[in-house]
Amino acid sequence: MKIRGKSKSINYKRQVLGGLRPLSSVSVTTEIQNISSQFEWYGTTSDDTETEIFLNGSADERLIIQDGETSIFTGDGYAYDIDNELYKLFSFSIIIERDGSTTAVKLYENVVKGIPDSSLTTCYIQFRADDTNEALACYVKGLAGTNFSYRVVLNKV
Image (cartoon, rainbow, N blue to C red; front, side):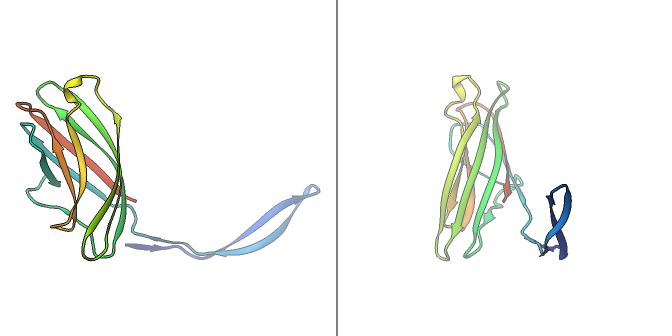
């Protein structure tokens, strides 16, 4: 989606010995492309096996990276231990690009806040490049015999 702003004249003024006078007149045109898009992954697990979760909680919907595209995403997510009512929170900054034949990812992932309970230290949410599907994939891991719910929201910058 493209939004094109209107051109307008702006008169800059400065104070000169107690008075204002025009300094210059500038024409400004703005154009905004690809206004932020939001993507949401969610799903559940009941063991400690790494599992891929999908967009919109579907069975196989992935975020496809277009040929020649470089995208930046930021967002937050959580792993929720349903059985013990504990949360682990995550914050993500992701750069991913597809050069036509492969999908390469540069990923910066930081836990914003971790629950002090040491039982959640092995739980995670990770994003990876999926070369097979040319997509950004989300993987999660919980605990054996424990029900977890996961949700991540990323915004395309």
